[in-house]
Image (cartoon, rainbow, N blue to C red):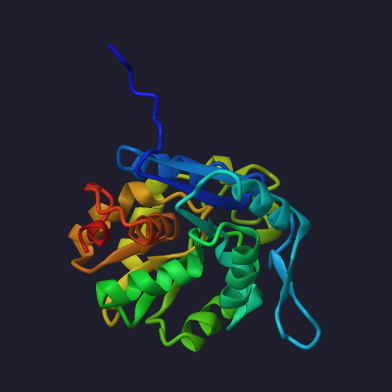
Length: 262
């Protein structure tokens, strides 16, 4: 009798992720429906992963990104996503579309290309959310938080408050830039995150958006939606949902938010 070999005959999705992160792949594999696989290319460049040209006529891909795209080109993928919220936020308005154009030129013409923030826009619209409560990871410094609020406002989503997750006493005095290098990314706890979002979510918010593909959180999405009675979206969830739709896959995914029922 043949055993399941996890062959992605229905769809294969390529994902660019931060070189030192484990969360994106773990969360995607938890949520993936049968017959769909995810394949990661790791990027070590600083954000943004593509640099604006001086005249802002377009962007130049960092070497890791270009190399990964050339490798993805031979893999018969259905969709490719740049899974890095910070790149879009730092890149600013127009960056996502510019990087999609550059990546598309290196991939097969039938491969759908997207970014994590384009996925979040699609998910917010599909969920009817216009004023999300934005939750960001503790490694976002003040400048990045401000850029994130400005970025979503520039794209038509005025946030109804925000929360930078407090990772607890052990990490509280560590500068944001040092949290991941010191190991906080591999010691993330979802229960305190759930409690902080539930306690802090603005009454005027019509949904919650948890940004950051390295931010562990999909385990609490269903519980938060039940408690807050509003859509709760997260970075890896919205990218998987959008990539499945771009690939024409409408398989059932349960336990990770109402988004997959839309």
